[in-house]
Image (tube, rainbow, N blue to C red; front, side, top):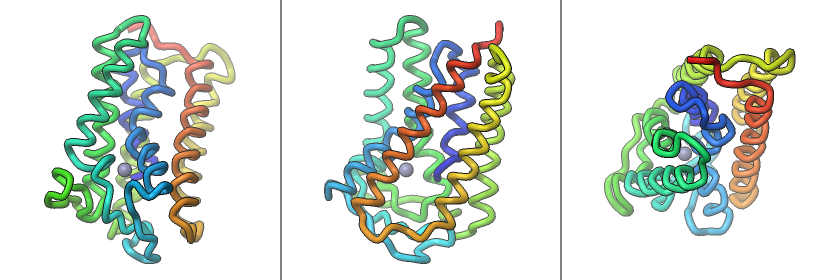
Length: 220
Ligand SMILES: [Zn+2]
């Protein structure tokens, strides 16, 4: 899953309004940020096989440190703890929301991945395989993103004109990124794939920070 991950990030604002959107947006892709660096450096492994699923060319046959169930839980706990230490307010609530956001990655990946998510490192792999149905997978990504976006618009309000417009630009850019990801030929080298993925997730985090600058939580 790609932009569908951002649905839970946007919706997270409803649970802890002091948590910046950029932190939620980074959290939902945290394990993929690590995955990009890990595959680029041969710590985890992926094969680029054109046509591997209807949606992408990734044979994700070895990613125990980022996408096994216990690893996802550990990343979630670690990120939640770091957030709770760092946050000026809503430490516990905010930390829990960040942990949930990090773990939501595994849950949403479970829907689309073909069986490649290990229940434990070296253990059986799971995945419901929606990627094999391009339109269904795309509808799911867009549906989850749209639902999160609706929540975000409801629980925040613009500070001015830019805050009114920017969230729509942000979501439009996400949709464009999803389309680009599908139509561009897959990179030939795994290192290029990994670093491009990680850089993209960091760039999207920056774009989300502009939402934080231009909007504020609506009074509950
Ligand atoms: Zn993933």
